[in-house]
Amino acid sequence: MRPSRRGAAVAAAFGIGLMALAPIAQGASPVMPSAATAASAATAASAATAASAAMATPSAATALSAATALSAARSPHTRDRVIVTTKQPATRERATRERATRERATRKPAVRKLKAAAGTRHIGTLKPGRARKIREYVALGDSWSADTMFIDVNGLPDATHAPLDCFQSPVNYPKLLARELKVRRFRDATCGSATTVHFTQPQRLPLGGTNPPQFDRLTKRTDLVTIGIGGNDAGIASAAFDCLSVLPFNLPGIEALPTLPDLPIPLLGQKLPLGSCQPYFTKGGVDRLQVAIDASLPKLVRAVRQVKKRSPRARILLVNYLNAVPARGCWPLVPITDTDMAYLHKAFLRLNAMVAKAARRTKVELADTFTPTVGHDICQPPNKRYAEALGVTINDLGVVVPAHPNAAGARAQFRAVLAQVQRGR
Image 1 (cartoon, rainbow, N blue to C red):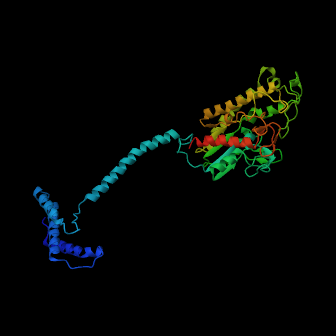
Image 2: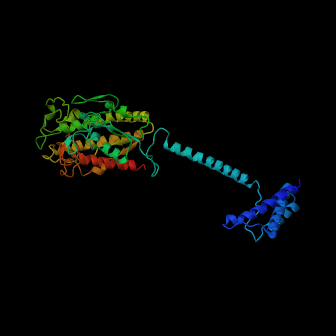
Image 3: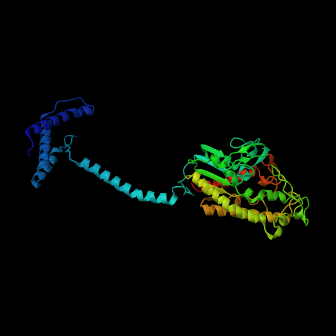
């Protein structure tokens, strides 16, 4: 098809108009086009006509003619250029769409691999830079997570998340951690004397309060859970009170004496404070503490698995017990004989080994508070120890529950747990 003469005339007029408007765009006053300018426009129109003909009849001669016309149209005396519209933009868009499709196809296998590695039901330790912001944190556990106290410079026990007679410290490690992480939703279910039974059942407390089942605080949205439990299941806390002695040595036959009734708040053991707790717990050739620790393992494993079901997106940290029990005694500072302290120390190590085994078996993280607190046991000077044998403390001056962490110990626990959380960032 040949281009019409009308099209050529329109092109010429359009070119003349552009040249007339060009000075206005550059800030000059409009002038009428001269004869030379009109000739240039006519040349441009001829170029457009030739280019149109070249596209309409794709022969070599026509293409050469169009190229010659376009070259002639590029006059050195004007800033205007003749633009020939082709289908190049559409081709560019199609190429862009095809490139995006290829990129999406390349990304999908990589995303599938990441999901398979992380798991869809549980998020374990994440690589640096990959951790999401924690929005809902729930703390579960016993008195060593509640960091139980009676009174100190921070006030009375905190009843914000649990009854007053759970004796939660206002500065226990879960609260410090929630504050540091700027968690939006935080629930602290920890309570003195709690066992794994109280994860699913209410706990009756010594002053008449009731702590609801600790698992009631978990939701599908929970994305961080710390669990510090097992010591009461194994009977380690009460065993420490059974080892108290008013004498620096053990008396034979003490294990045969009748036991005392349980107190609502552990201040004394079940036997008279005359030491010899190792013979008492190993009577008949069976170590009752070891048996109780072994029996606590399946309870802890079952509890962790239940947490996974209730909060499938949660990152779970099992928190072990800080180093409060030395390998050797310091009577009368702590009224326990060397023999009994060594026995308690070994039992304490076995308890933490059980917690670590539960973490491995359930494939959750272990937050180690024991290792960084070595050298801060109950036999250390008052300003250095992280736990109190008799309750009175100068660390945030006050009275904590005997044989439990003080405020300095709570801060040490916080640092250890925070370090583990940050390893996933």
